[in-house]
Length: 253
Image 1 (tube, rainbow, N blue to C red):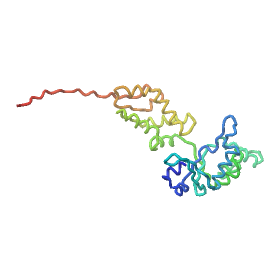
Image 2: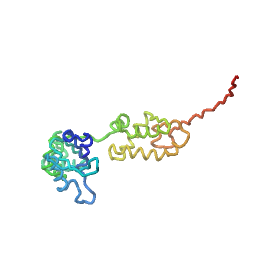
Image 3: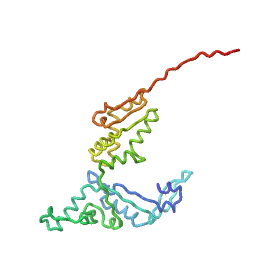
Image 4: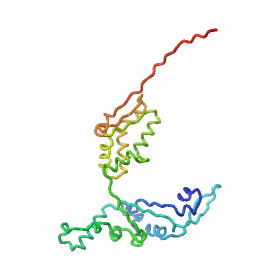
């Protein structure tokens, strides 16, 4: 339905769109039947991956329910997930293949270090579903440089978004160069990837009492690296109050 809306109602165009399924590896803490790694959910996904005509229900301009046939066979489907600790499953497989003797000292080729389809199956994915994923791309974990790159260059950088919000109050924002690496270290300490940027930023803004600052007569806020360890070191530039000179005008008659 989202693709159809993005294509302004052109179903044929929407059928050639990109469907991204995030957290394909999701597991619930209580082992409930809603786990993605359980058969029922994956069987539903298998229908999409195989290519089928499904009914998409929506409403027309008059509010009446309508059904739109949607062919999924032309979709580009991207499934993503962290698959936490799947490396342990791979290591157990490699240890078994090597006979378990001297495994730590065995030289393992880079190709063997890759996660195999069997590893994903042992993790909980259906073999049929994995068979529909011909291309597997491995992503590196975030490091300080990648976090800094997001902060500086991403259009969705939380720093830039917050800066625009503060600018609406007539306050300028400056992030000094030493701020970025210190802030990136704070993000990495949370161990939740790029999602940690939002949390770390909100914690920082709370610590410096940003709402109080925005209500004061401040023209500029400067964030330096020192702010990360001591929020009180945020630099506030006061707003210059202009004096009003009233001149008496004499009108000649």
